[in-house]
Amino acid sequence: MTARVEHEERRRQIAEALLRIADTQGLQSASMRAVAAEAGVSLRLVQYYFTSKEGLLLDALERLGAQLQARMAEWITAAGTPPTPRGNVTAVLSCILPTDAESRRITRTYAAYYALVLNDPELLAKHGAAQPDLLEGFLAKQIRAAQDAGEIDAGRDAEMTAAGLLAMVNGLGSSVLGGQRDGAAALAVLRHHLAELFGG
Amino acid sequence: MTARVEHEERRRQIAEALLRIADTQGLQSASMRAVAAEAGVSLRLVQYYFTSKEGLLLDALERLGAQLQARMAEWITAAGTPPTPRGNVTAVLSCILPTDAESRRITRTYAAYYALVLNDPELLAKHGAAQPDLLEGFLAKQIRAAQDAGEIDAGRDAEMTAAGLLAMVNGLGSSVLGGQRDGAAALAVLRHHLAELFGG
DNA sequence: CATGCCGTGATACAGATGTATCATGCGAAT
DNA sequence: ATTCGCATGATACATCTGTATCACGGCATG
Image (cartoon, chains in turn cyan, purple, yellow, brown):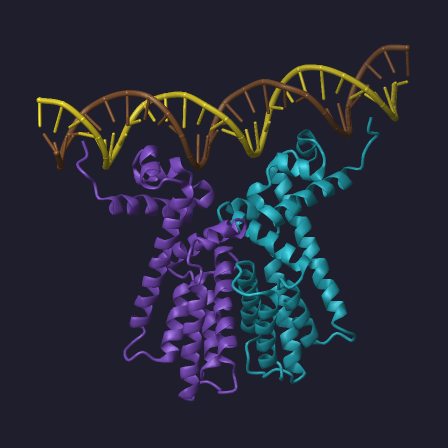
């Protein structure tokens, strides 16, 4: 009936169905059956292409990470040529903030995974959890470059500043998802601090 | 058999059992039966003192909020007399960071609730969700006081600075819970930014 | 003394969930 | 042409979950 279907394509289809559910209803609601229905396939197929639910969750998480990375790359190139440290930092940080539909989606879904990982630390181990550290390193490098160019006071600690900025953006994102403020207000807070770090 | 037991005491006992489970195993694992077992009572009693699970969750959340508030009050008074704006800000922010057992517990449990609220926004409505805003207002007031005293550059926007600091602390807390860094490192980042805001 | 409510236990119920099993059709290789 | 493995469907199973029901002993109030 089916003639050797492409596995990767089916896996993508199913994993993205899970991400869609995680975004709109939370990971709690992402049961095997719900994912199957969302993907338009039978429960059996979800079992077939992903042996266990844990496998499905991990695969979808990797795809989510790739999506975020792609978005960051886009925002960096859109920041103008030639790339400047300030442009890169601004692009990466604003791109994480839930300001438009896609970033809201990504942020919400990441938050759902975060909660999952908190009480199932083994899951974290099975996933390359180095992403935040890489980002922090990238930011620190940009800040050092800006210091060398005289745009930022050389007395500042680049690593500390990078860590603080990234944490602030994460916190701002949480406040947006929690309904405490909207994306524009969060962006304003970020811009304010960036303006204070680089020249006004 | 029982002779008119004190309701409030039983409710406290049960709600704290839920908080204990939420801390150690996550809210997912806090089923009615698990809470009953942890509290050392029968399932029926949990049902009796809290009609529904939602009621139990909300009650426990209020208690958690009270615990955090008490901790902040302690840390503020421990910051020295007379209270200074810088002392207050430092106390409140460091007190939220998961650096010791109790703050880890509170932060973890709040994170669990945060995930719950994300995909069940009605729950948020039934709970006084103004807490973060109040905190932000308090911080902004302290910062303005420091500005009046000449400790902070008067050109800064107090509200933006307060929002940024609070978000940063939340983000740092998440990174600690996620295992990216330990409490001491998070505290160092916070201290670095506070030193930059106030004089070194 | 009788009546009725309060606190508690045991158990039932319906639904959901992850996973396993059995079956079947189709295409390719021998 | 037969055989075998891949892709898929239907269904079963054991477990857990929140909630509801039935029952019963004790204490206070009439």
